[in-house]
Amino acid sequence: MVAEGERHILVVDDDERIRKLLKRYLSSHGYRSSAVGDVAEAKRLLGDVCFDLLIVDVMMPGETGLDLTRDVRAGSDVPILMLTARAESEERIEGLEHGASDYLTKPFEPRELLLRVRNLLRSRVAAPVHEVRAVVFGEFRFETSDLLLYQNGVRVTLTGAELKLLDAFARSPGRIFSRMDIREWGDAEQERSIDVRINRLRRKIEPDPRHPVYLQTLRGQGYVFRPDEIVYSAD
Image 1 (cartoon, one colour):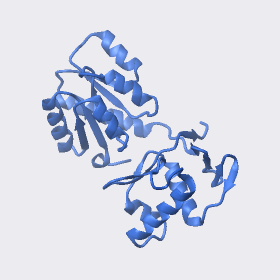
Image 2: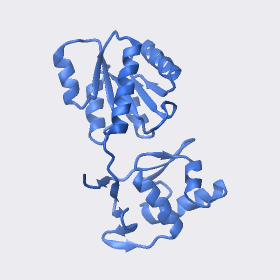
Image 3: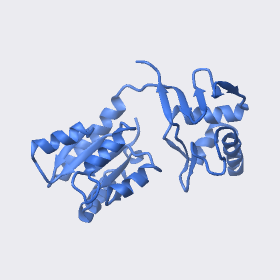
Image 4: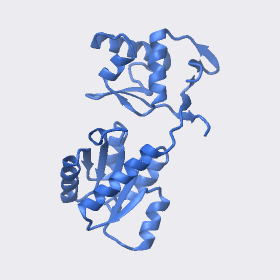
């Protein structure tokens, strides 16, 4: 089980006081947290970082928390705890219909929020995990079961190091891997060799290796693989 300190939570609320309160409270209980004031900024951050849970205010200027929840649910099962100043059942139902995992009405007791956060994270860990069977990106399909890469149906030859790298990324799409993680996959003794291995793989799978679409670099964090489609193993 992942330690609380390794869990990263995103708070999305236009109320600066609430953002500061939640960041401070979550940090005091061992969670990493980021906070933004609108949906547009949340979407930009979600494009770069994989969060373990979202805390989203419903009513915000411009796009609402319901809009964000609907968009996130189109491609992710990350738990979403929605906050609202309204207590009407219709609003709660609408949030759940959009994919919210839980609901909390403002004003709330911080201890209750913490309990809901813990329950949501615990439920996600306890949920059945399906292994990635294949990933599809652009003209490519990579089969993790037999470690084969195809481009428009034609097999692509990879070196042992390239294959090990692609397999590790493909089995955890969307997860950010640090340089230290990548060093543990092989015999890369120096930072420079990691860059070389990444660049060699990009030359085989990216339309333009200088501007990677699938195997992306996140400044100061590491690398993340973002395929177009993920095929999971059957139950």
